[in-house]
Length: 195
Image (cartoon, rainbow, N blue to C red):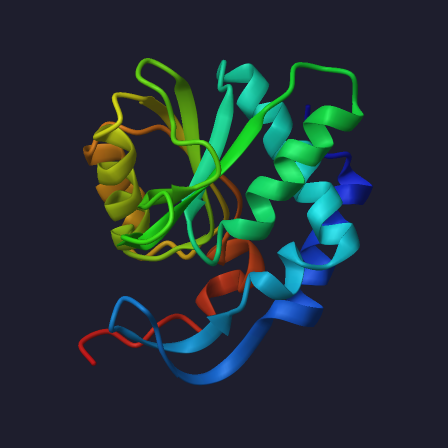
C-alpha cells in the first residue's frame, strides 16, 4: 500500500505545520540542531495516525511482519495506529508491542509492554524520527534477545544524520516516510556540525 499523492501531501503539510520548529535544540542523541521535529504532534493527530498507520501496515504486510514495536515513547502511538489500521482494512492483522527504556521489575516485569516478541516471529521496529539510530538499535538489541527476527525498521522521518548507515550496517532494512531534505529543501536549516 502506498499513500496517494494527496495523502502524502496532507501528511507532509501536517508535519511542517505542527511538528517542525526552527531554533536551537539539544537532541536526545546529544547533538545540537537548528531544527526540531516533534513527531508525536503528527502521530497523535487523528489524520496523521491514520495515514501513518495505513502506510506502515502495508509495509509490514509486504515484509511479512506479524508484529511491530519500538522504543517508548516515540513508537507508542505509531504501533497502535499500525495495528488498528491492519484490523480495519480486512487484511492480515499486525500486532503491536512497546520496548521499555528500562526493564520493569514489578508486576510481570520485563522489557516489553504488550506481548513479548516470540522466537522466530518476523517483526519490524518503528520510531517517529531517526537521527543517530541509538534508541532504535538499543530496542533492537532487546528484541533480538527474544529470538524474534527483525526484518525492517520504519520511521516517519529520517533526519539524514548518519542513523540510516548505522541501522543498515547492523543488518536492518530501513523504510522512512520522509527525509529531512523533503522537509527542508536545499539544505536550509541543516544541523550545525561540531557543536
